Amino acid sequence: MHFFLSPKTVMVNYHLSLEISESLRNKLARIAELAETNVETVAVRILARRIPQLLQETENLSQLLASIPDEAVHAGIDCGEPVGSEIL
Image (cartoon, rainbow, N blue to C red):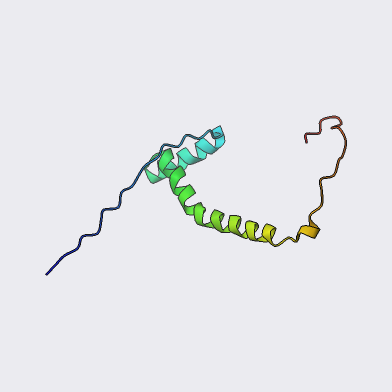
């Protein structure tokens, strides 16, 4: 009788540094306090839950953009120089 062992899955961890507003940090801290964990864990869990939906939304947008025929795309429109507080 032969037994074949599957190779171990190797998990590589990466460091991610984010700049967030104080109000967002306070909300994450409140959730972390209630869940008895840390802010980083809460943030990663939230991101992990949203990734499938974000991927689907991005794929849908890509499909919609790809379906626009070339004749429906026009060149840019020159509106002249910015006036006042306009940001272009």
